[in-house]
View 1 (cartoon, helix red, strand yellow):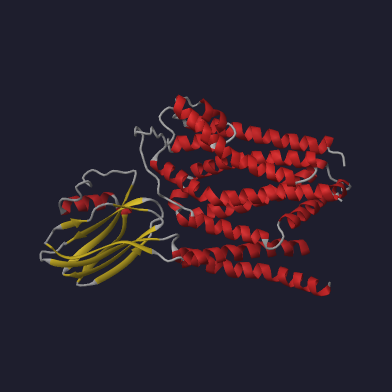
View 2 (view 1 turned 90 degrees about the vertical axis):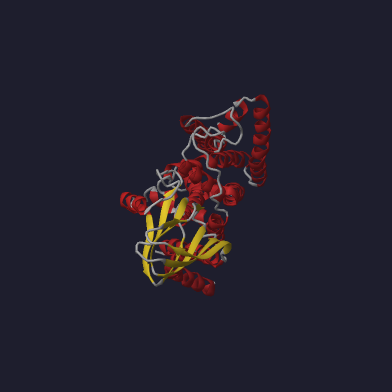
Length: 190
Length: 272
């Protein structure tokens, strides 16, 4: 019984140590690597595509979009190994874009259909990948797009790491308490 | 009393001695921090037919580069822990006569040594690999899971040489019956390898023959793995994947042989 208390107690203290490390890692601030912002009109049926950017799991991409009119925003994942025909020149027209989206629904990380609205998103990939941002005006009227894209560098995905630490800390404390009490009693007796 | 209970008795005593509070916790903390702080995805991705004749696919190269980056300092910390456990743990037990007490247990000598090595090596390895691979999974699950084979092979190749030195240190500690000298010898041997492989690399590049690197790869297969995934040392050696597996296998056969010698000496020739 005492041996099991010791084993579980030490597992608990190790979990607490790992949680502390994870919390510390999550507190390391992000570094802003680059920001690009702009305002531009998007003509009816026009597709506007940003250039490729390679993202790693230690980089995050934040995007803020304000739209006057109607604009569909697509955040696409194009892996480093794959190459897609036509993507080099990136969707010359709506038909190409729609064909690509129909053929590769799994490559759409997220999409927004904005009508006089605002959207904000922060994304950290789980592998090394190419990211492409596509704006498409599906309406027959001009739309105004105001966007800001921020690239940040991070040691680890902060929220994910912090959540794991929040779960493992109480488990570690629960496992360690009987062992700590036992050790304290023994020290008191001797 | 069955054999299980005395074995557990020796094992728990060894674990208690090797990992006094808060040693284990400090090492766990350092491994966890190191995994994230040293992780780097900054690898040059070259595909087949590139200037460096890299045969591996890009994702494999990324996985290899990632594991190599997080192994840098944490591996040294792991080695210090293992060397300390073997040299001081076993050495002090021999010096103080605790091993003699174990010999009175209804347990074979090889069982005693297994319990000691499980504590010194097994627990340290479990902690190290458990934290590092979990950390990698948190950081980049879509790299680690599809490339688990590459991740494990990189660990296997990187751990082979430290395990060989651990085996040599075990033999020295048993022979000398004290840990201090074998600890110093082990550390010197570990750092000497980087000097030797540096000299061998220069010879290999100058003579454009991979023989020197092939010889070193038999005991330190991380070199053949580096050449397979990175091709950094030049075009004169482009090892195939089967070659990487062969060198890794050979290195572990050598490690197993050294530990076998340790077991044989401990079981038959160690007179206290």
